[in-house]
Image (cartoon, rainbow, N blue to C red; front, top):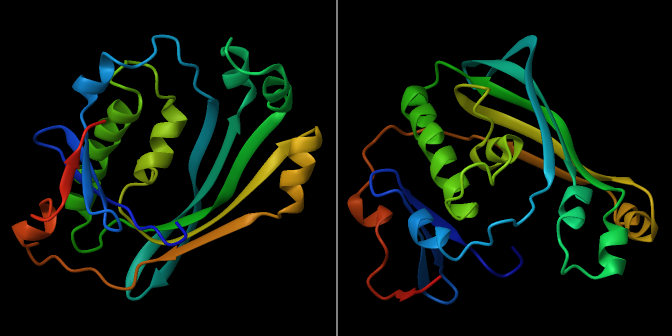
Length: 214
């Protein structure tokens, strides 16, 4: 993001996520168990409706047979404003009719090299990141949000091509201002896949990084 890069190490054995910030040379552990005690009990989350459905279309991408899935997401921000008594009235009013949307398609290769391992990791990562971001509170993370975090678990395989468009729906001055900024289009394409073992050093916190508390 801008001049800053962030890397995340997900350890599915220890159930920890470690966020690395190379520009600051810091590492922060996101431990769901530790975050649970300090998480607000009634922190509202946006209502998220997500759909990932096969279209029946297939195509060849770099020698891999890929299946197309249609993706749609609508995040209703009004649900956050309604449950926050400490939110300023102007901010709550601005979010009353504000919805963030994402639509597009992903092309998934079910039989790509390493596909089974990738899918198993994604399943574990979904539970770990949802727990970390919700402070370990069951039900605090909407199911639709969990899908967005992990790359759409309803489409098993490796997503070779992803084309998504993010936009805004609703009424009000804030919505109109954000609409003037235009839609954001995201295109991601896999160039190559390697199933070679990854050196342990790549998945460890560098020795010169400073550990910081949550």
